[in-house]
Length: 374
Image (cartoon, rainbow, N blue to C red):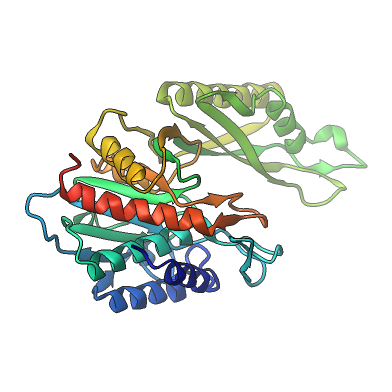
């Protein structure tokens, strides 16, 4: 039913357009152009001005042909992580890769291409459907900033689907909460060669605290990581300041709170012991969500996948997506995959067959929703 050649061509064109977070305008304008070709008008919100970006989220709406069908929200983010150099996609044995020097940008331009193709097919084949709202977000990779600053009036829907997953047979129904923290540890500067005993080495204090904190996978629901350490001025100066940045994620808000409390206590106790001073800032990034396997949206997603020849199952993820924000807004939302693998690496790839099959599932999702998912 779908046009695989057009789908792949659209994806290849999109990945060649740079769109790192906060600099998505060129790619977003191309998406807007593609929407116009499909026969859909679209518009931007002002999220970009709130986050220091060059454009906002892009919206479109398709008026339903079936009365009383649920309103569906389709989403994918336009931005990518930072890219060093130009993305040059190559196709080998039915799989799309970059040339190996950069990421591919399949996260999440597969989602963008899949949604565009699904909308094109719906219009061309005059398939039955309810109201469809589309939101292509910006700055997802740096904390879901586009979704957080979206105009909620344009997101109102009965159910949402973020096309931002990997394997096509996994429907992500659980995602964690995340908090970020930044500890500023103040020691005391002194000459490292003349009077080292007069100083308080902030890096040493931070290192002692970090050595006492569990990191990595704490249990099946919880992870913790310290990813950035900044400090020091010169090798002959006892450093008086170090900044430590990290995060905690968990599907259990109780576990997240408990581990963040442990981190705070360890840093505070170590600083007191070494006569250093600490300022700690903790910032919630997004809240967890869990969609019940017996829910209407889950039944619909599984049935649509089956219609596309996919034996799908509910799964959990350790990452966040725009679906976290939509669920916070009261829109039950799932994450669907269209074949992305090894994302955020130079080995990122997507099999054309998975991209096409995943797109077919989205088309089936739209038409089955028009039948109220029965």
